[in-house]
Length: 118
Image (tube, rainbow, N blue to C red; front, side):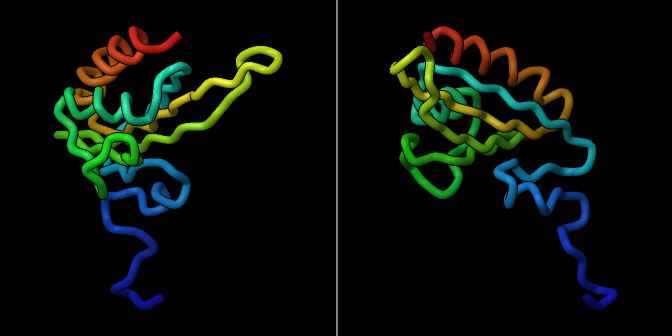
């Protein structure tokens, strides 16, 4: 690597994309929120209603990233065992954002997601 190259962009978390985490700017915080009983489509829809824009798709069911003003979220979904032979979907939202943006966004997202889930 030469003097002008770096492993990641200045001020961003270059390894985040590889690990499934959203890229973060300097000074941003991270938080993980997971809910069972909602779909990735519904989580993306909630985030869009909270001011975010889907990245890479126009279909909330296919969304894996949503960006808003001062925040970014990656979404993933997997089937988990709830009891014996019962499997349900668990959606994990990895948030990155400025402290003020997350302090405003997270309670609103949690309220929406909790109402939908079981």
